[in-house]
Image (cartoon, rainbow, N blue to C red; front, side, top):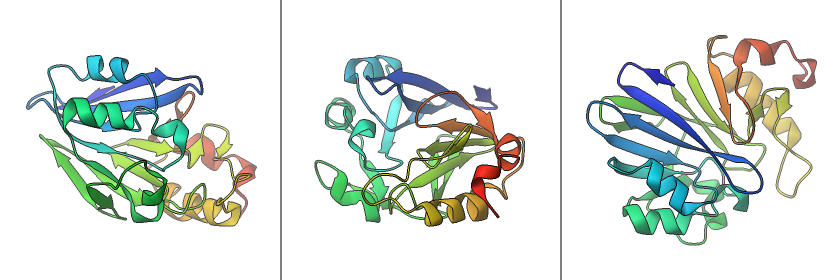
Length: 193
């Protein structure tokens, strides 16, 4: 997907079919890698020729960070995650992500949206009308809350209060699987009232 100078590339990697995202500025070559889940070489090849400014993690589950150490070593880029999930990383992050924070790279920018529930430090990232949602929301329903540390009530509140107010035409780019839209998800009764 390309909008203006901003390009979003999806890399499906690993046995859990995770979506790793490479977001770059076509004009400056600055880029961000999001959720380097697996297949370090695949991610590094996709980022070849780009200046990777940082590596952002939507949440600390192992299936989203399997290639983190290798990608960090290859790019030298700093790693960031929400403070509440930092202990899940294999090493301390270089900086923390927080709600409403704006990450600039070239002529592009991402806004961090803290969406706890799947994990306490779960985040989404908004770039224009593109939402990189990690495991917060998928086409067809919210992220898994039948796991230790998850809170279904909190996740549903995060989705209703922080995701659903976004434009209905916003495309959801989830941590696994296909894309969807906010408008389509708002019609799904699984989110409650």
